View 1 (cartoon, chains in turn yellow, cyan):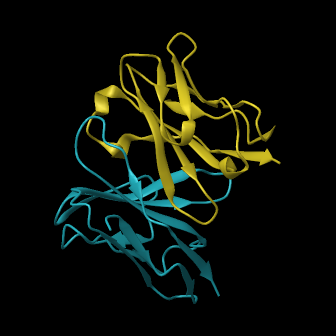
View 2: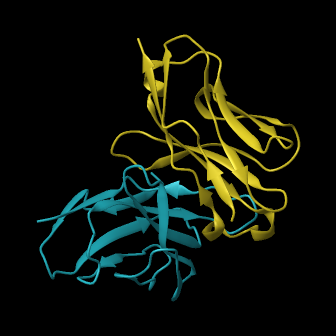
Length: 117
Length: 113
C-alpha cells in the first residue's frame, strides 16, 4: 500500500537553531512531493513542492526541503527557526501516474513543531 | 482579495439534524475538495469535484453529501447518518494540471450538542 510517514509527532527546537521535520514515503513511480503548514485553528498553507530537477527545493518563509530518491525521503528544513514557525506541518505525496488529480494525494499525519524562545 | 471562504467558523449539530457547511472560492479554480481533520489522523478526503455538476466520493463519503451547481461554490451537508461528525472540516480548491497546489479555507469546527 502506498503511504507517507512523518515519524515524529512533535519536534522541539530552540529559536535560532536549525530545524528538520522528516517525511518518508512509499509510492509507485516518481512522486510529486509537497509540504503544507497549518497554524492553530486555520486551514493549510502551501510551503513548497518537488516535481523534478534540483533535489533541494526552496519555499516560503525560508523553508527548504531535500528530496532523496534512494532514501525515499523529503525532509523539511530551515537554517534558523523562529518562534512564529511553531505550527503543524504536513507532508503530502502524489504518484506521478496520477498527475492532474489531487484526489490521489496521500497525506502524512502531521508533525507539530514547537520553537522555544 | 482572492481566496476560499468557509462559513460558519463554528457549528453545532443536534442529534438527527442535517447541517450544511459553506465553501466559496473566487480563484476561478475548477477543482474543489472537502477534507475532514481529526486530531492525530491527518486529512481524509470526503468528496471532490473537478467540474460543475459533477463530484466524486473520496475515502470517507458515508454520511455526507455535496453539490456543485456553481464553479465558485461547493457546500457540504453532514447528514444525520454521520454518527461521529465532530471534526474540523477543510475546503480546498486547485487548478487542474500535473503540479497544482491546494488552496485551503480557514475551516469549520463542527461539534455535536
